[in-house]
Image 1 (cartoon, rainbow, N blue to C red):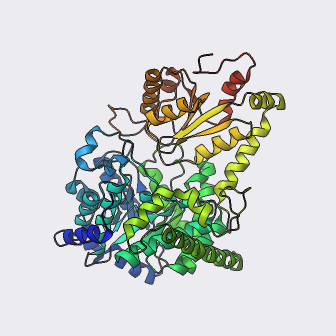
Image 2: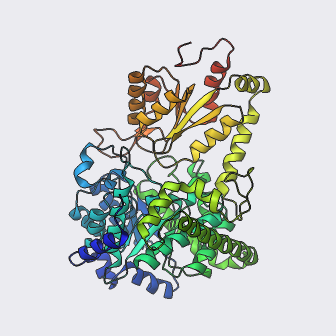
Length: 582
């Protein structure tokens, strides 16, 4: 049973009597009270800020990297204004429960002292984003971040989508998040509640206007109901320069909160480092143009071009920052080339659609009895409804069952079309005889993911659907026991798993054990980032585990093509149905 928001927010305000924003080397050297103050001063000076992200697993190496990146860039006349660090998802569990919980590839901070070490590693703002707010440990993590002098804390977007392994108490998660929000809102200086829209529902909406509408809903919750300030980040899934320009224009038109950062279009990195420089230039150029026109305070985020292959090292991070600073100089001179009318038209459409979505969502929640004055009731309802149903029922476009979300999109999300096109191209490469045989077998595939990254899941579902294979939803961030249970209950012919980073082998071993306990002999395909951090690793970097996964009898899949031999075997007329006893 969820306690009333008024009670939870009061708890947060009570904590604020003793927990205040501390000082760190960045605040002291910049002579400011908060990052927001620093941002406004830098915006007034006409400079575009830069954000660097450090992905190492070791606290020591992370601190060393922050210091070295800042120093090396400064020596070349480049200012890194803020750093993000990759906290481990296990940070989302209450501290007393972390030891026995699955760990990913990020840093685990042991307490306030570790937060302070990170915050004082370099004279730049520290961005404590993922796995601080929005999860069960939100209160203790937020207290530690504030004490370390962090004044941009997130990630609220994760509250709506992220599920920790073996944690299903969404009421406890909601209550912790509300107490943390109350604590932040009660500070006597401006602390930004960071929300990465792409980590929330925005990365799963088929209409970009729904993403803007979700920003408005979050703004209503945090600013109108709680009294805080929410700063929205976006960019992971925005591959089109026009969409990036228009979304920034629209977002700054509906919110005057200073920005945190515009994230890099990481889904655009699909090739070698040399080729990825083209993608880096494409999205950065759009972001620089956007910030020249509307000085929102967002920092640009030049993602190193090796990011799709491995965790970037220090020299690669420095190279990306230097590249970005030089591109700022070139891009300012080329701003006259932009068709601002097209940008403005798209932004107007986004604002109109976003406002309709936000209105529809709040009106719909009220209609089912949700108290619109209670932030917790709204948040929990949104989390449980999920992005697909929200967009289907409350999207701004007209109803259209042929469309991805059941509605026409005001501004279509690029990832939807990219997945559909990739599935179509792949299916077209298969010979018609094989396609017919596969379709005639009425095969069933149970498809799930180890974490919240589900675009690969959508691609597999769409590709298999082209061949007449029925997709059974195995869930997102699904536990191995649940995935195998669904496959058994629904009579799946095989299991397909998507994984993102750092846990592939452990998860595969757990699935193998679950299959053995259930007495099932099902083929298992696993794709995505097939790597894992070794238990005895000194570097904290993940290593490829493709061979180990293959040794389990599973099928590693670098692409949809790797599914074809299994489909061909299952489609043989004499083939028995795996795991079904015939």
